[in-house]
Image (cartoon, rainbow, N blue to C red; front, top):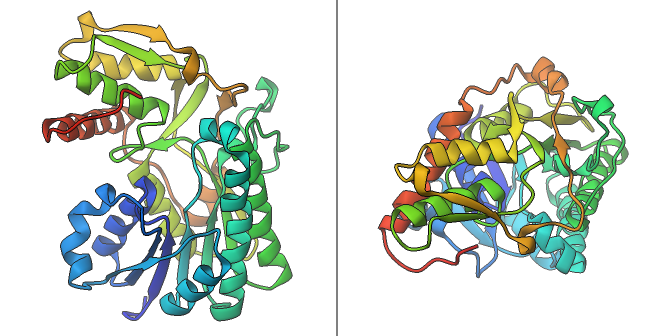
Length: 339
């Protein structure tokens, strides 16, 4: 790749965006432009702030997917060769309370971004991140889920990601732009937001170990089946997507190789704690969704055939690294919501 290659990452301060920056700094010489809102927390890129301050390959651009003018300005500034559209209102449970914000950010925001790219960087190779949640409630006989499985979204978030997916494919087909969409299945690891099941479990266990809360882990639905991937494998896959045989309008399922229930995942985390024998589990009704996508097992052969990508980080390492991340956060002190 040219040393002058430039990439634009929306959602640079998120779990995935921050890990993608780490990967690109180590494996490319690209200039990295990251979109964030002025009020976005910087925790996930805290370790990068010296390089950001020095303008050492990382440049922050303030904007908002809900503002067309800021999208136009951001794309003009970034002048990207590669785009990773990761930003979203990404929490399914919140989308039930805030559906309009979710649709505006995820559906119309994607339209605003792609319209700006069509205008200012039509040559860019673009990754639009949809979600496995588009498939929603899938009957067992259709497992594993391939790319042609019918969409049956089970939340406003999932509905918004159907729109994200279709807009990305539309731009690829209608405007001859190299836009590819991915339906990434469950992916996690250090820096995962505490509103997501495995991260809130790890956080609660770390707080129990530190004596901050009683030895009870509060949960939502434990029966859902998930295939787990590590976020560090995911971002390597995203890099391979845009650099190995990019195909206009293509769409791919990506996911890990280890499948288990949310309960089994929780049991794994608890088993890693020295206080495992003291910890009990309690269902919290406030953590239950009105409807759940309960079978999320991907068929990833199409993506692997095109790129050669394979997940390499074992499930147990992902869970241990997530738990250690929360242990470190809590050792640093401060106060934490028990969510």
